[in-house]
Length: 256
Image 1 (cartoon, rainbow, N blue to C red):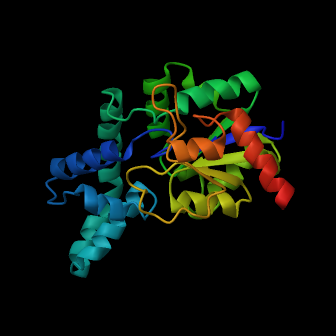
Image 2: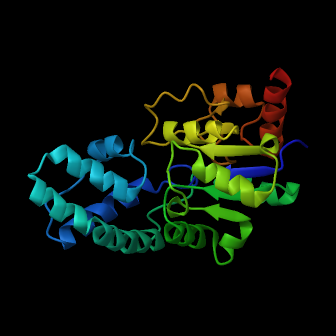
């Protein structure tokens, strides 16, 4: 088998987390007396900027505040982000960020095939820990050989830094690794690191141009929610499993 490692993005890929993030941001803003409240449509646009603190800075820049007022807000952003992280973990613990269709099945299947798992994300390690332990149970972190979080690198996606970091610690040749993503920023980051990239668009990224993905499917599929007919015909099965990913990886490398 050519496939030796799967590297997952988190937000929008492993789980439907972005709505929980949005709610946590809005709750944090209210707690601090800020009048910022991000709608779903507004947040979809803000997601083009990766990283929570960076997203707040992008919103701040769009307000064109006087320099003194902007500086005061800018200074508070790290504190607001810490509050937001705490609120987010509470929402996750309440089940507000379920795993996406087929994710747990694919993780289980990877263990059967001996495929190493890693994570390359722009979110914080604490957010990853909270999500994995809530959705996959205690010991979930141990199922991933290395977790590359956003604060561990100088440049977040679409830069390839986090993928290069994860590849270093997995110790698997990049030709034998596949990235699983949901957005253009993630796709660019993964392909910039020379990785075959499987993309499953989320609600927040379904309007993005993801045509450059090596394999593009609406979700991974499961017994209860199989792939749509067109995707199933392309994949050759009603779900995307380790064997199917390996097949597409081999096919792409044979054409290279």
